Length: 214
Image (cartoon, rainbow, N blue to C red; front, side, top):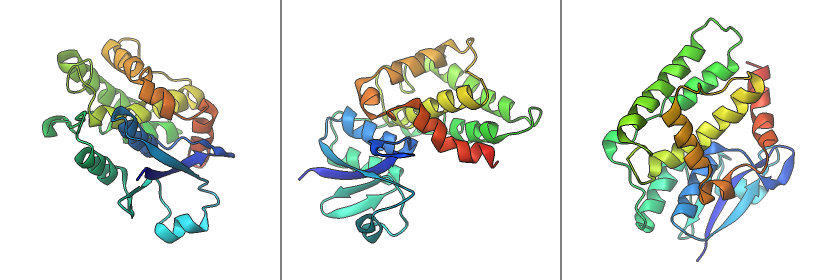
């Protein structure tokens, strides 16, 4: 029985894969484990009736395992690991939170209207911490092999790169060479190519309301 997964459709293009980093995280996990699945693209501005019936809170990603719909990317990724243990993507518990503050700090900086409010520095501090970790442990968070923590970070770093590049003309400092190599390595994986938003514009369109109304 093929797994079914509901993911965000692109803003303004309901037939195209959208830009949700949590959906992409789940798709990356399935791709890395070579699990076949059927995708339902959900237009979040006009959610289908059947989707709301099985999932009243209307959030994506949503996955169907054994006739049961499950939401929340953390829960879903844990279930995939349990049901399809090979290849293992388990991150050692002590490394599971590496880079976990980068996304909220990125959002804070992206929405910021005041360049002296410390949000840029807060993001740089997190990226510097990731640089230090990768310098000692890399190329991935747990060394040579990609694990769940990398698959969670990859889509978020993609959003950071595209959204900050567009709205702030900002990019990760060149001095963070390990972070740059890490990003390059993640983005060039076949699983990432297959699951990333079809166009950078979809990422920009997804963030525009949050930036403009911040």
